[in-house]
Length: 494
Image 1 (spheres, rainbow, N blue to C red):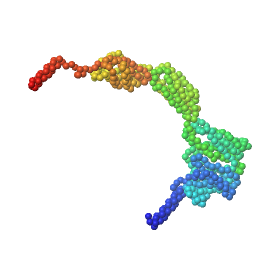
Image 2: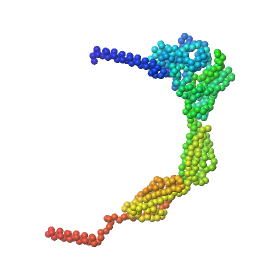
Image 3: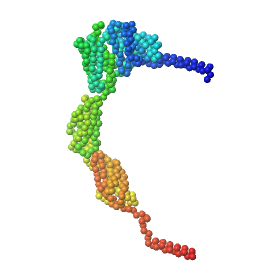
Image 4: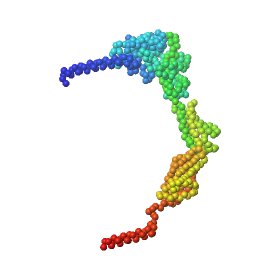
């Protein structure tokens, strides 16, 4: 490539690259292209400028928590925020108490847009700050970009002294267990403490319910307590829980609620017991056996009750989660057995239907003789002319006990056994020898009852054409003819 051609191409590539960079930068700062999000990559840090407590705030969506900071009363405090994709249009800060000009969550102050800091950043983040004079013992606040609020409403806290920390007592909570927490209180004119909880919704706008306890001994500076509340949340519900303290503010002479900055989000888990039954649908034994296996996630099976459906009463098994139980019925019949397993106040019920009957089935066997079927009775012998050592039978059966025919089998005295499933079918038996053979017919019903009878067949070989002797006159004439032909042939040869 010629040098005079190469240089313009390089210049063109550089112009294109600068244009692409400018477009990318513009798209990052345009809130219409992507919804601004709170930058969660920057960890909270303190920055001292002009004697102010300056904070750079970040909030982690994954942990569902804000940040808590301690400062001194009666001084200026500057709060910094950054929004990925933000610009200088709107970034209000909302305060959660009246320590700064009687503001509320619904009234915001537009934060100052930091042009210099924003221009220095290459990630498209816009920076804001707000300075105020703190006169209260605590300030709670959140920041949003325009109408786009945080994914959740767990505020940051700026506090002078009072704190509360809550911890889970167990790793899970079920639909029947109380939700229990341990609270650690650091006292500063505390008059009470408690827990706030609510169901988590996509909008995070449900009202909190409070469980509070009064604290009359103000001299306590450190306290560990446990607190719980019952609930009616369904399985799978997410519940947000925060600890709080009620504090007497010496500056405003008001009692205020200071919420814990960390919000626990727990999911209600299912502890409904499970139950599996194994029992015969059909039986001919009055002593019936039933095996059960039960369990309860996050709990224990405390009781199993069995109703055998024979007016014998309820059989109770305590604190045994699996077992095989036998029950002696006084008569045959169909029984709807009910089993219920309990775990605390929850239960599950399963059923087994058992038919106990002792009526034998009946059966019929027909032998194919000369192309026609002939029914056989017990002890009867049927003669069959066969070319090969085999016989074909049509079998059928009936069961009046209610369980139904399971299968039918024919077995020869030579040990050949053939079975058909169901109540009818065709069976061909092979034999080793001609002659008389005993055959055993067995009909099985599903309850285990049997019908048995024996008959016999006599296999007679069919004579084939090759076995018939040549008649004497025909044979003599044939021999004389052959002799004559030989004599004529010899005479002509001479």
